[in-house]
Image (tube, rainbow, N blue to C red):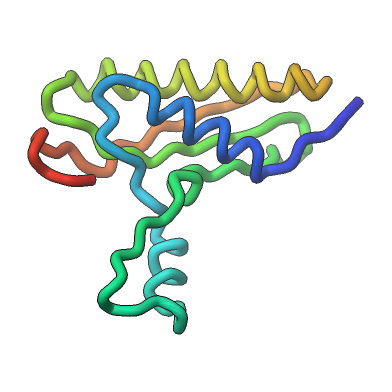
Length: 125
């Protein structure tokens, strides 16, 4: 049985979440934002845009029997939050399961979607 790493799963999950109508963006986790803020290479004049993968967390289940994927997202107020969150959940789960299957891995995937903010269309994520 083949294995797949965390980095490809993050990318697959981020791409799937961003493809859902009503997703204004992905919200990086606090640890990633703090690390970026403390980075000595970052200049004040250069805006820092973390990669979408920074908003995704992929962990193996404690017993190694599958994956837990957490997506932190910002939604547009023009869509119903609950419907959009469900759509994100389903699309990310399907994309990750498909990615694992392509690599010969058949494992369960638990997906959690956290809506961090709802913004008006003119606001930026």
